[in-house]
Length: 93
Length: 138
Image (cartoon, rainbow over all chains, first blue to last red; front, side):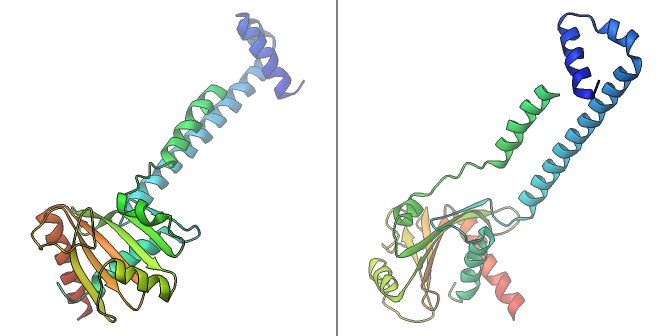
């Protein structure tokens, strides 16, 4: 029996409300299943937290909200630089 | 777990996608083949003030000549600036008119940038931005 086989048995038993029997008959498998699920949940939470942090960082460090351009392949930051440079270039106030 | 992922993944994708609202001036020129057109939404002038900017770049001298004519730019060097009507940016308006475009054309770069000015706070922030940068340069 491998993990996937045990998972499918568990789900089948879950549908029938018979997990108690599995807990008694296969305690080691149940423990390993719980560990795997905990690990997966931890990885998911960390991934979401990391993603949220990255998104927050990138949105707060930019000096613009977003950029649109009719040509592809030009970096967003380039246009913010152009907007800034033209203001600086213009000595007439 | 699969259910959790099914909920989380669309949420993450939703967070990634950004609603890009195109400004009328951008839309007006975006289809032009001879221009590179960009809009910078929420360009930061200072900690508390932002503005929207539309940038038109002529791809060649012919396109630039066309743009100059379109926006009634009669000089040929340096930077030409004016306050433009919000609906017809080529039309010059008084400095006090709001909302308006603060337009700046850079001949060397064949570029015109339009900064949207909604109120006196934005206008002042724009001036302060220029002054601050000039001070830093000098």
